[in-house]
Image (cartoon, rainbow, N blue to C red; front, side, top):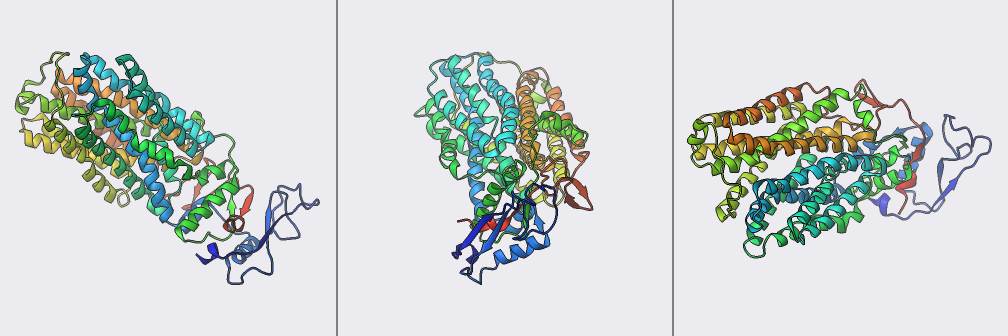
Amino acid sequence: MDNWTRPAKVTYKRWRNAEHGNEEDAVGPIDEDQGKDNEICTIASAEVDPVSTQSANSSEANTSGETFTVDDALEAIGFGKFHWKISVLTGLSWIGDAMEMMILSILGPQLHCEWRLPSYEVALITSVVFIGMGLSSPLWGNVSDKYGRRVGLTICMCWTLFYGLLSAFAPVYGWLLFLRGLVGFGIGGAPQSVTLYSEFLPVKSRGICIMLIAAFWAIGAVFEVLLALWIMPTLGWRWLLGLSTLPVAIFVCFCFWLPESPRFDVLTGRREKAMATLARIAKENGKAMPPGTLNDYKQTERGRIKDLFSPQYRKTTLLLWFLWFANAFSYFGIVLLTTELFQAGDSCGVTQGGKIEPRCSLECKYLTLEDYKDLLWTTLAEFPGLLVILLAVDYIGRKKSMALCFFMFSLCILPLFACIGRIALTIFIFISRAFISGGYQVVFVYTPEVFPTEIRALAMGTSSAVARVGALITPFVAQVMLRTSVYLTLSMYCGLCLLAGVASLILPVETLGRSLQESSLEKEAGGQTTTTTTSQTYDSTHSAEQP
């Protein structure tokens, strides 16, 4: 820590040796007599404190040609105070996302009664949000890959806040539908918080930390139910819509603190910004930067959809899209099945009859205290699921963890085919939701790990869009098909998750303990990541000595 706080008089000079200035491909030691135009040399005056050894170590490393990557720097800095701050800030965007999703199950019954809406118009309020998310997710991914993760995440959260507040003032159904669709368009960029967060984490901490970020989703869902329990009986749904934007508003207020990903800065050739960010992290964590120079992997083409289908990533992309689809289809399906099966009354009658009698589409029923309690209990099921997967993801690996969740979900669906009581029904639904929610979070860990920085945000965006398609389709299975055949409905969810479990196991790459790739040009050789193209390097002493 002393090296960060002790004042030192340092002079920076840009060397412009006419003889060597244009030799960009020159290779060799760098000293004060020979350098290139784009290199910055550090010269310490006689007044520098002799105890400050970091500059001396870096100079020796430069002379010997030692270099380091962003991964090396993050490993040396480790997990510390900075990471706790960014965990909370990115977690706020997840809380906001979860609350905007959870409000859909509360808003529908209320407007069904208050505005006398038919069932299809109530369902359309939910569908339009998922449509907006599906359309915008690839767009936000492309923006984040081209202009920065911080830029994409900040814009989408500001968008969500603005239209979320406006929807609270919607005068009629048409305006509410339009504004909630725009809210969904903004929420489509929320997964970019995982992209940004993952690029600041050391390898050893990445799996557990991303899973802990997922806990913010569960917190947001529980908080929305508690907020509705307090607000709806007295102030109504408009206040609930307005107050549900509070986490997003807090994020927008503090987003100025959020730095850009150093991986993105390195990839775009902004070495100085990357070094300044790494130095800031090291300072807040009380650690020293590694000695040497920072490798620069400048990539001009980023965020191209065709790169997802290159021979290197084609199989991974298609399998992951299927896994995202299966996760969303099953997760939102079990949420809808919970209320449908409970409202059907006697579980034995439901399963033996094989179908549920349709109710009048204009039948009005406000949510009661008991309904909110049931909603709260089923939402709490996500916490034990996260706990189990948190223990498994860094021990058995990402692929096996996803397969475990899908297989356990299918296993818990099987008893629903038989005649079971309400208590047993509740237990099996609770366990199945716990596992499918845990599996949903593992795929959030795996996706940013398996793709390189140049297309990582786009991969998250397109995967999220495919997931929204699953979420859009599942109401027609869990609500419409269920009224025709319970057995066929349960078979759809059970069979799809069995296939998803197999797909998890045949993914080409296990990312446990694997460093994040900076570029698709990187090759894995002997367990060590090397690059085929290494361009300019930048002295870490320059950023380390900056105030």
